[in-house]
Image (cartoon, rainbow, N blue to C red; front, side):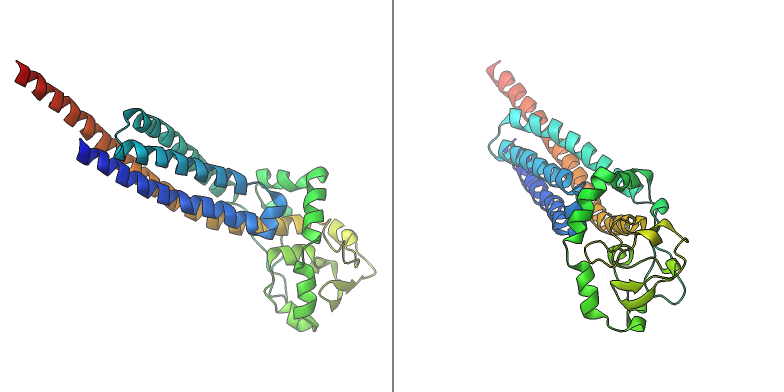
Length: 271
């Protein structure tokens, strides 16, 4: 019984360690400028990681200090958290399945279209109420100003591999035919009817293309890349937690069997 309880305690210490990458993934998302503006995924991930830590701690205490009711709470709560984590992993994969950048002639950077992304992600940015807050947050960052410091000549900028957010928000879409002055200042052509985003562009440094669909698409492209990385971390943690849980169940069953066998032998000795 003692050996089995020690095994349960030890593997729940591993479960506690597995909560660290989950919490870390949430904190990393929270520190990314785009995710800090959107505020969708980071808090569910952080909260789930903290819950895994608390439940694993309960299993650790229950195993080493032989508290059966804590072990039962651990077994029930952990399977619920594993299911929730699995659902989150699948959800992130599904909503980031669609969407990618498009090559345009004579440009190293990609252009992005809002319609390419999943309907769920699109709804996060299509609402004017939601986007006004996100746009205000994005425009307060230095991501566009950094382009002006890095690229002086048009060809250098056209050959640059800028981020999806910078491509969508800091410059007009290439199809609009604007003439480059610097990365955030462009001369308007006579005809700007190619796309609504062409009319949305402004050389005002606080406006730029933050109201454009291309900016929304660039944001979603950034989110997709970062969420996919976080999803890989969550998947690895999920596999580890499932492995730990199965070993814990096996050890708990052995502990109960040993306990019953010990009581049975004690009963025989009295007879």
